Amino acid sequence: MIDDHSSSSLVVPASIQDHSQGVLSAAVVLVMYGDYQCPRSAAVYKLIKIIRQELTVSFGEDYLCFIFRHFPQIQIHPQAQRAAQAAQAAEAQGKFWLMSDTLFDHQQRLENGYLVEYANDLGLDIPQFLKELSKQVYVDRINEDIEGGIQSGVTTTPALFINGIRYTERWNTTELMAAMIAASY
Image 1 (spheres, one colour):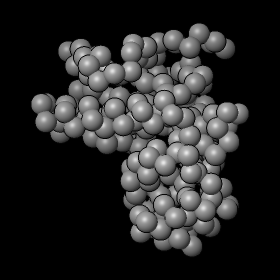
Image 2: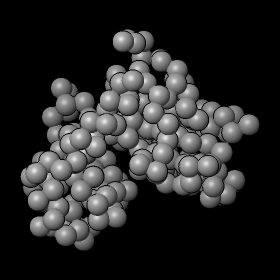
Image 3: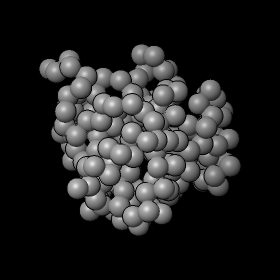
Image 4: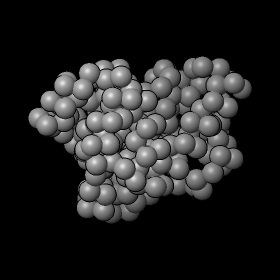
């Protein structure tokens, strides 16, 4: 068991099973392990959205593939697991990224009633959404993400991997973008 949180590489490679924006063959594949109730995850997620837009403008649509993996830290964020399930239920209806945006934007309000409200706002089929949440249909899928994160040395969120290598520098636009561009050469 590795307790060094700077473990250097991603054990579970990016695949079509992942939630991704962009193509897996992109020059830069950025994997983020995140927790919907974690303020730092929200900040980094928003930062990545900005960087992705800038890189797409500069280098084209196929330059960056952004992958989000669940890593709810239920011991400190009791609603993170349920929020991850809501994102998965939204995914089943083609709205994963919209739900992720909403969850990060409203991370102070992740109780069940709010999750249903967000699903409704996104135009999801509410009976299906509620059924999947109540039956905890996506727990195994979320646990797979967590397990893969643990194997790669993830202990806290957010955790980023650029082309399979753990990113440990500062969480700001300049340094993160520079690291991505450097990784593409």
